[in-house]
Length: 204
Length: 130
Image (cartoon, rainbow over all chains, first blue to last red; front, side, top):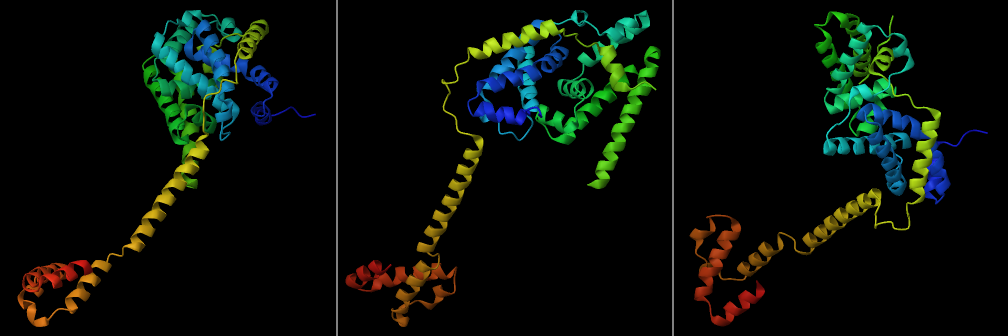
């Protein structure tokens, strides 16, 4: 038996089936929490935001027109809540509070940690839109169409924000010897992006 | 060759979410949702209906405008005035003013001059006609 899609679950919720929303919570709670904690870098704040986002999605489900996927709509609600809360409360986070993954722990050389910290600082310092695009593209591995839906902007703007984020990182890391290898990786990613852009422009 | 995205994920540091923690949060959210009273829905009109309604209002307003224009054609006043002037004695009209200004200006001017010379009865009749 095939699993129920988000679209079907949303329809069920709109028809008054409250239980269907529990399934949506089960599906999206964990990835949404991970996305928000990366963005806010504050566990308690992320927990509140995710809970608020689900409550808001539940109470406003009848306004959801299903032009975008439920996931994009939910992420957009959560992202807007996160932005509002961060604006109001001023960021109290510290990059040291975030537990790093196992792969990073294995490579615990001092140089690695320095690079790690430097990259975290530089990404956190990116303009909000560029940071959002980078997070959604790199960590959520989303297509630009979905990123545009979540950021509530045109497709090209989402792509441009990601590109500008890469260019800014490239510029920042350009003078650092330890980050030379990183620069090459960013260049390769930019090449891929610009090749895609070129192909799309030719099609237009 | 190292891939940009996976390297960045490693370096930026991902938050480890244990299954236990994830379940706890899930329960917390579901408990909060259970408290939500959906019966207290504020009045709400779906945007799609608002869009349809606004298009309908614009079309309706345009139709009313068109109908109004049909009832009072732009030419009607001029035609009426011309018919009145046709009924006057040509000799009574000062010819010099006919060539000046727009046709309507000339007609009005002629009527004004003419109204000074014709009888009160004729004047009342003329004004009624207009």
